[in-house]
Amino acid sequence: MKYASEFRDPQLAKGLLAAIEQAVADYPGRMTLMEVCGTHTMSIYQHGIRALLPKQIRLISGPGCPVCVTPIGYVDRAVAYARQPDVIIATFGDMLRVPGSTSSLLHEQALGAQIKIVYSPLDAVALAEKHPQKKVIFLGVGFETTAPTIAGSIVTAKQRGLKHYFVLAANKTMPTPMAALTADPELKVDGYICPAHVSAVIGADAYRPLTEQFKVPCVVTGFEPLDMLRGIQLLAQQVLSGRAEVENEYQRIVKPQGNAKAQALLTKVFEPCDTDWRGIGAIPGSGLKIRADYAAFDAEVQLPATVEEPKEHQGCLCGEILKGKITPKECPLFRKACTPENPVGACMVSSEGTCAAEYKYGTD
Amino acid sequence: MCLAVPMKVTEIVDGTAVCEVDGVRRAGSLMMLDDVSVGDYVLLHAGFAIEKIDPEEAQKTLEVFREVLDAGLLPE
Ligand code: SF4
Image (cartoon, rainbow over all chains, first blue to last red; front, side, top):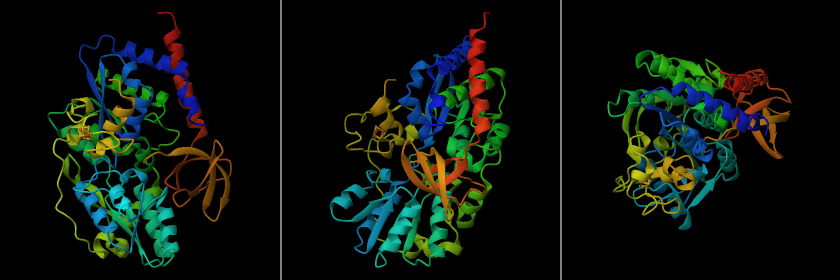
């Protein structure tokens, strides 16, 4: 696979690892680096990167698994819509198993609800064209990589004059929660491995406020093992020399200013709002809601539903996991009451969730 | 769900690129990108090409990895 396999070369990986080891050899403490993005978490587990790193470097996972941070009330609302006979829910696959307060979409599907997994929000628009008698509701979750694709689906539906395509929007934006985590005194993050493809849209410069205000080093890296090792090397060097800068290891994709067209599409349809992060709480200005101009496509505005009172699951420590405060093994339910087959929390559902990654590959 | 893959553009029809990797073909809307040509590599995410891959920058990054390796092999 071009632009992937070259970035997995084991010989070059050895070189990077040796450089990291050399750099931190005399470092007396431990530096904590947070990978914010769920795909980085998955890659770290998949390639066994933690075990390869010297003991001076600790990697913790952050809140960048979109499914994991979607509040339980959102799942409950999706379940309520799924129960309406004239509704087809269209969604990315990993929302299916996420436990709501008393049900999940998978459960509703088993009871006869029409729930279709799509690869693209445009597939959901096509689904609406195929079913003119139904209301097709797309579950809009994800960060800045995905939000423009959802905006694109709404613009397309408008162009095609569709009146029965809706989005239940819970999209979130990235640099804001990183600032919130940095300000948390219980959590000492020495450097951020910044999300790769979110940065393709927002640009590497988006992390400047973090380096300037909070003096925490930020490196944008790709998802391949060599990218990640190089990112860790650059972060370690910054920590050792007391610098806090934005460095971009992923220049083959990410530009300083990002993708202006994608940003324009996003802001055409969405505007910032305050939003809840599951397990973390409310973070002002970190969400996206559909603008009034496109309210005709906003499920929450157009479609009433009787939603149950949200009830979080007892004992799930997803919030602590998403803040990087504990590892899955420190959760008493891990591998016992909570497994990918029967997830208690969202972190066990998505393949990008830290608990699911630890379950599948875990060795820490 | 955020998995985006580098794919080669093999055809462009009506603002949509036909993209291919390892024999798998997918359609990618070009709503977010200008100046895409057949033969380019793009990052495909949820049915949209979200960014072009810069072949020169890719080479430069691989060069850096090689330099790090070579530096480690030098006698102290
Ligand atoms: S193991 Fe399950 S219950 Fe424990 S934090 Fe993870 S998702 Fe929640």
